[in-house]
Image 1 (cartoon, rainbow, N blue to C red):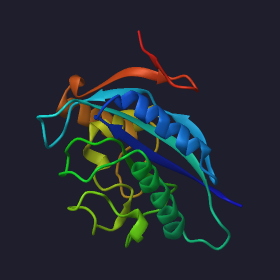
Image 2 (image 1 turned 90 degrees about the horizontal axis):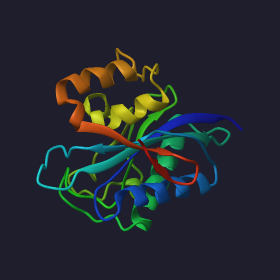
Image 3 (image 1 turned 120 degrees about the vertical axis):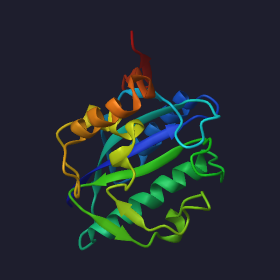
Length: 200
């Protein structure tokens, strides 16, 4: 069976966020049909939208996703989305305001070279009431302008030009870092295979 390279963004700022993201990465690695192919550095990132909250920890993972025979890219991406939302629920994700604190957030950023916009399956809907009715859109519609996504994604796929973009991930990250400042996303740890190893 074929595999598709997908990139998934992870974020948290409730409790021990770094430990939560490490556990979420391990949960993804154990998931049938998924093969963990890379983990970005861990970033400390400034909150966006709602500023009166702790800073976040963010990372991106590269996954090879097993595609069932005859399945469309939209079907396969939707199945992955359901898995991501299931992990969020397993980790106690609570419905909150948009951009508010979160126990763990897993976002499908890129799914191969596919541009997708389809209705989300019920099990793949966001716990955020404001986003629950939104379609599954890939590449993620906000990723292009969010340093907390672009910085870790550039660790794994700097030369990638996702569908619909007119620049590489690295160029987008450099553009956004110039706009937001270096303090908006600081690399603080690297993945050791078992967990995070502090940098420096």
